[in-house]
Amino acid sequence: MLVAPSILSADFGNLSSEIKAICDGGCDLVHVDVMDGHFVPNMTIGPVVVSPVAKVATKPLDVHLMVEDNNFFIDLFASLKPEYISFHIESEKHPHRVIQKLRSLNIKPAIVLNPHSTPESIEYLLEDLDMVLLMSVNPGFGGQKFIPSVVEKAKKLKDLINKRNPACLIQVDGGVNDKNIHILKEAGVDVVVAGSYVFGNEDYSKAIKSLQV
Image (cartoon, rainbow, N blue to C red):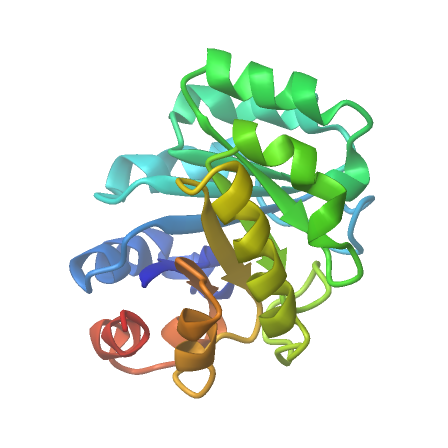
C-alpha cells in the first residue's frame, strides 16, 4: 500500500519541516489538497505555498483539485511538475480534454469520485487514467469519519479496472487509519491518503508504516 499524507493536516507554521518529516518518515507521495471555496465550502492553498513544498519534498507531489475551473488550476500547478493531478468528475464537462491536457504536460491524470458518484460513471475513461481517487468522506475538510460504503465501491471499481486498464491505481481519501487499512487493501486499493492520522501522530514514520500493509 502506498501512503500519501495530506498536508492539509500539517502545521502550516512549520510546513517545510513537516514535509521533510513525512518524506524522511517513508511516505510514497505528498498529497496536496487544492480547494477554491466554490466546488467545496473551503479554501486552501495555491502555487505560492506549494512551490516551496515542492522544493523541500523528496517524494512526488500528488495534487488533488477540488475546484470548478480545472484548466485554470492545472495551468497554475503544472510548473511544479507533480506526479499526479486529480480532478473531480462532478466538476468537469469535458474530462477527456482535461486528461489529454495533463498527458501533454507529462502529468499523470487521475479522476476523483465523490461519495455519491458511481464507478460506472467513469468506466469509459479508465483506459486513459493512471489513477482513480475515491472519496471516503465528503470533500472540503480534514478529520472526517470514514464512509464504509467506499469499500464495496472500491471492489466494483477494481472489477472495471481489471477489464479496462489493469495498470490504473485506486486511491482512497478520507478517514483512513490503521483500523480500516486492511479492509481497503483487501478491496483492491493501492494508495491511501491520510492527513489527520499521520500528522496527529507523534511519530510520523510509525503512522506511515502502519498503513504500508
